[in-house]
Length: 531
Image: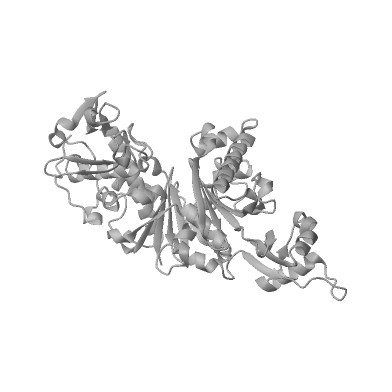
């Protein structure tokens, strides 16, 4: 079973799996003087086959006027929390305005919003913005420490809620809608980001024994979190599993569909950490480790986020050593992103320009080799060809850092597979999430021993799986139960105290690996070792 098909889910969303129900009530009379709320509640219970429907006081204040104005023929927007159905909105049955939901990928660096019609599943608009908390600190750790200062938590919270409110207005305006048209929101983020969004102190997430305030926030009223949409709107905050495995990963699992598949698959999401899930419909095991920064292009001074002029792919002719470089938008090169960095590492290894230890080989690097500050550097782009006007270089230290990160990545994968008595070669599906998955060339990653030597068609890029999972939660009530099942089924493997991990890590710090039989498809031009 592959990734969830949003078009398929869209078709299902208009059935009894969706969140919107239209009901026609018999108006009250002297013969039937049932209260308005009881009348609506009874109709919804019959429609939903449930005995638990909740309405809040805000709705009750307006309900008599609403029902009479619309002749007791209404469209109800519902959500579900811990088995109880919540009435999150009510409109005229014939209202032509769409009932919308907002899926949010609450990233540490970037926040993505997707607005959709929850009756049809149609995506109405999408936008993204830099997380405003970057002004507090570039990473989670800095923001958590800042939250411990006076007013620090409040400012962290205000930055993200104000940012979301601004972007929600812009997104609704672009779709000719009002913010009142947004009834449901699903938010998927890591544990710390979820805490800061909800205004919860994340202090103990980073201190022994590493305990979050809450693991299952559930469904919350939007106004309680300061989100300015429909007054009745509800927000699903995806649950997390402890401090280092957040709702963004649970959303990713939901989106991949691996939680309902018979065959065992693996999912990898690379950010600050490499987070990995292995399993199927019967069991799931997860772990996380520090393998991210190098894979994001952060190992070298010329490393940067993808953008115009950034190198995203490289090939080297093993005979002529000509560098074939591609940049985003075909602009003059200014730096290199993660996918380009992995390509570069693969090709300098396959062409023999570095040996199995990752050491630059002078005789094959030729005039591209330079000494700078007592350290060898390889010229990737000569100054005359770069947008910056100076050489774009990768140092021996940069290469060493990348090798450590790729070794950590492979060791995480190998350790989690070994923990359940599996070999990575047994996998038929390898899901790769995020921008790492969208742009990485699997062949290059295999060549340096970062990911297992599987057939290329085993690798399935998921794109923004966190956003995809958050979207699915707005389209089908069945997803709500599945989210909780996923969370309850996951076993977390702690790598920090795993001696086997350290042993395997040492073996993986070679290109592609000390055990070359694990990478039989990798053919290197020269394995000559030079110091």
